[in-house]
Length: 94
Ligand code: HEC
Image (cartoon, rainbow, N blue to C red):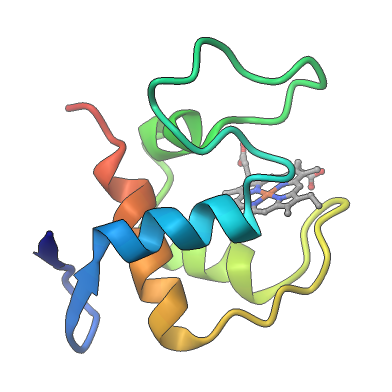
């Protein structure tokens, strides 16, 4: 599935974005919208992050470019970031 994000050079790949989210974010964040609940430690799920009005492609890029909390420096490439951002924003239910 392809989606064009404003402000990005090319088409982002949602399926690839989901795989990357499982690999890079799944250790700490619930990745899927179908998950019954968040984690016991209260970390926001990716759908919950997507639902926040202040979440934008730029804010997500910022989170991925700098370590946050206990999150290690992931050094995610630009194309991978685009796909991850497209996937996360696709979880927005509106
Ligand atoms: C090693 C654990 C870990 C991994 C891996 C991780 N995170 Fe996080 N993340 C956290 C923690 C802990 C917080 C809580 C905020 C803090 O402590 O600074 C957080 C917070 C966030 C927030 C802010 C949430 C809010 O409510 O504002 C976003 C956005 C986020 N993570 C996105 C991601 C994305 C996207 C990935 C994958 C590319 C990822 N995280 C991978 C641990 C992790």
